Image (tube, rainbow, N blue to C red; front, side, top):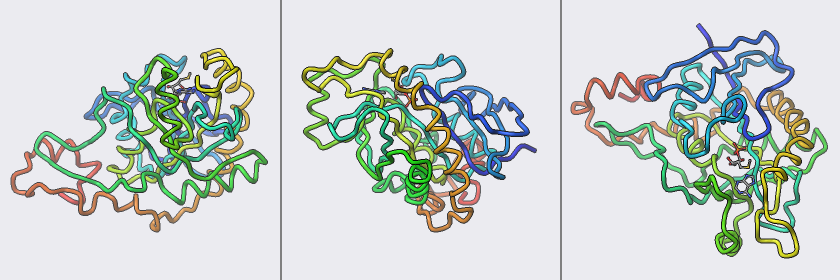
Amino acid sequence: MHTAEIGIIGGSGLYSMPGLTGIEEVAIETPFGAPSDPLVLGTLEGRKVAFLARHGKGHRILPSELNFKANIYALKSLGVTSILSVSAVGSLKEEHKPTDFVIPDQFIDRTFARSATFFGDGIVGHVGFGDPVCPLVVDTFVKACEEVGVVGKKGGTYICMEGPQFSTRAESNLYRSWGADVIGMTNLQEAKLAREAEISYATLAMVTDYDCWREGHDDVTVDQVIAVMHQNSENAQKVVKAAIRLLPTDLSASPAQTAAKFAIMTDRSVIPEAAKAKLKVLFGKYL
Ligand SMILES: CSC[C@H]1O[C@H](OP(=O)(O)O)[C@H](O)[C@@H]1O
Ligand SMILES: Nc1ncnc2[nH]cnc12
């Protein structure tokens, strides 16, 4: 049976995790369909990890097309208890410079075409999301950045937009007026589903550009994002490697680990057997 303790979701520019040993690629089918790619299982820093390229190898899947449920379910089915996510983001503040890392602790949802819950089909549940990322994973990323010697800012608000087009200048300025720090297209649904799945989640967000708000500077382009990513992916890989070593093995202090305990509202006697079977990997102990 395949198992892993830590999941790594690599975003734009991070399509593999060098240093993994004993690699095995595993294609996992879930009740929600197939994940973005086969998962790459292996050992890093003595811990069992599963790597998933968020957009698939070769970057084939749009943010709006991502099967977030299959991705998170597949990791849960392996026994993953924490997810280290890596993402490229635009900066909404002068102080967050390209190549800086930010570890966001809040989100604002500007998506409109995505489903982001495992509940439904006869089973209703509501998990808390006031603090949407795991503080233990955030602290681990911060320590890992310090160790590697790169800028890693603790906290900040990530705007999750639908895309795939980048923002208009009016939108970018609106988000700035809200005090948001960075913008991307992928992290919120992952964080929501990881919370429902009781997986501790946080993101290492790599600033690649200043979006389109900065007067006197060119608007963001894919070329610019890729150039910074190439410059920075080695640092991201070093930080993730250090984070794997530093991540506590005991995550019981993380609220994420018991997030679904009191979430399910539906009278157990009316939950359809099919729904129970579909969600057994996630909520079996509460059904
Ligand atoms: C290539 S820029 C836009 C693209 O990059 C980010 O992806 P990820 O979060 O997977 O690193 C952003 O969310 C967009 O999907
Ligand atoms: N400016 C930007 N807007 C949305 N997603 C991004 N990913 C990287 N840069 C971005």
